[in-house]
Image 1: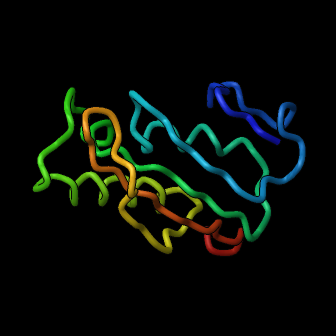
Image 2 (image 1 turned 180 degrees about the vertical axis):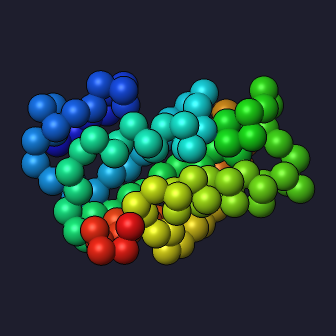
Length: 118
């Protein structure tokens, strides 16, 4: 099911009744820390995957891309936000494509923790 251009706040088990196997998320003007909790009403497969695009500008609440010296902080904040929920980050890589105004961005891969590890 493709829910591209769907507002995260409208997600529900009525809209997505089956367990989710994979989530890809690319949000703008909001941090992952603010966006990801909105996924929690959904049911997830035990081996679900999350692929998130980390945009340091939004993770840090800036109006412009941050300097390279702040990229690590933005990535750590995003990873911490993902790990704080029922996900376990397993890897991160810099995106080969730059974002708005040449912003450096990252992809993060996470797996869903089993119910026994929450």
